[in-house]
Amino acid sequence: MAAGPEICIQGEFRIDAKGTWFHEGKPIGRRELVKLFAAILVRDGEGAYWLETPVEKVPVMVEDAPFLAVELEIRGRAAAQVLRLRTNIDRWVDLGADHPLIVRAGPRPYVRLAGGMEALVARPVYYELAELAVAGPEGTGHPGVWSGGRFFPLTPAGPEAPG
Image (cartoon, rainbow, N blue to C red; front, side):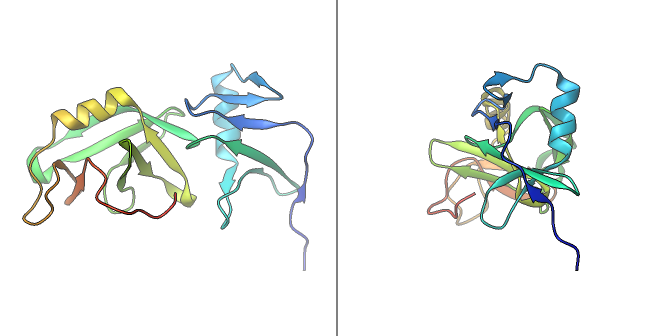
């Protein structure tokens, strides 16, 4: 049985609450380098983040969410619409069953991504979502948006599970 990647603790990586990546305290200014690191970012079952290759794992401290949703694209209308979000690393996701919108107290809206990752919805994008808000289906009591055949409240709905 082959051993997993070796944990490497040299070089500190951090992603701040604004989605800026840092290495050894300095921002990583090259967008393509950030995208490369993002491609190997994983989240383990305990919620810890790692840059993982076949031979080593490097811990990454994430202050909030590792990504930001920075752009909204609307396809269709009303309950049949699909809302697409672009992350700060140029990945598009369709808001829906596979990528739900989760709103925590604050309100702090997030979109769930693959691998247990999340993207914080940037304030301007959240305001765009708020402009699209409609009354929720009977019994929800919350305004929200439709996407991919699902309704997503734009306010926290109650106690939530940790991200």
